Image (cartoon, rainbow over all chains, first blue to last red; front, side, top):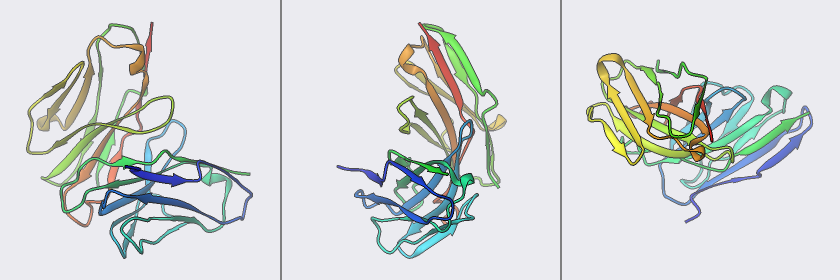
Length: 114
Length: 117
């Protein structure tokens, strides 16, 4: 079982560039989320999805877009990278149907915007 | 709105000491779920425990134990006889039940535990 797979693991962007962080899960989970982790802080929710075709904003959505066309994939798009988006990004998935089981996390993507 | 507070930013103990990590939460829901995750220096996030709001039984798993008290909105985590391998950042998280919020978890800022040999 691959679990939750994030790519790339590391990325350096120039200010203003755009890119997509990929996230895929093979556990048939309904719920998927994107978090960012900054030094000394917990995980802050960027966007989340409770199923294919359904997405919603989290705590810090500005500058990011998401879509959920399939159950398996939940890509995160940075529209115009800014140094403030330098962070470690985690994708997570969990079972839905109100069970609120634990989240399975990807290995993280360390993004640096210069 | 939901909130999780981990007041202890950093804790340092000597191996074999017991240590308790505090977690206080706020939610208006009557049904919710609480979690603890561990993030070792390698960076991955590892699930430790899940507890729902209707189950106030304490739980013990090896050297780990959890004390859930709804009356004080706390879900504390104790490591008994700590080991160097327990050194990590520990996160407490809260998830609401209802579908409109069910995909969201709110995390505390984490407690960095250092266990010295």
